[in-house]
Length: 159
Ligand SMILES: O=c1[nH]c(=O)n([C@H]2C[C@H](O)[C@@H](COP(=O)(O)O)O2)cc1CO
Ligand SMILES: [Zn+2]
Image (cartoon, rainbow, N blue to C red; front, side, top):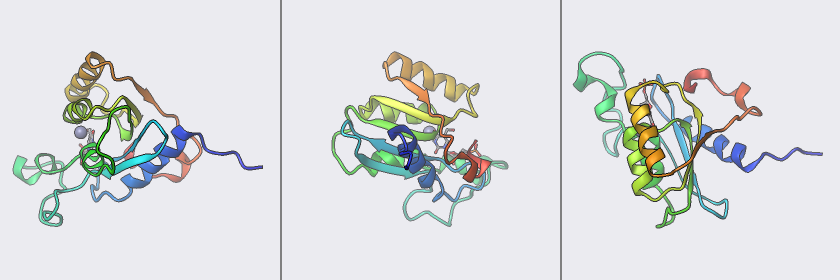
């Protein structure tokens, strides 16, 4: 008999699949927002702003204006903006990489209630420390998903 995926693994798998849409050659990030009825209300991945795709650099080294960082829209931002429901209150965001400080602000201000992440590869960066500080103060719990079922079929780039 089939062994159904848990909700947590299912939504993280959707986030992982969303990440596969990203053109970032170094880190593909995906996000999936789920409401209290376990319905998906938004997905996103890191990408350049609308109309700018193909015109902006994806490099992560070099001069600041020729690096991706000041241009790229993070997966969490896109998932929140792409939401198919007005109210994010009570929703959980599944994200393949622990949110940065800017995304933590978005998550808090959008009224999200919980964060589930997969990779924590920037755990010791200031942005991540600041992110945890704000999420803790806002009492938004975060936990690591241990998606084992599909992990072997996913490229290691996001981890
Ligand atoms: O929370 C996040 N969400 C998100 O979409 N990203 C994106 C921005 C960049 O395109 C990429 C990080 O690039 P890199 O690992 O090469 O520094 O991941 C990065 C973070 C946190 O670092
Ligand atoms: Zn971010």
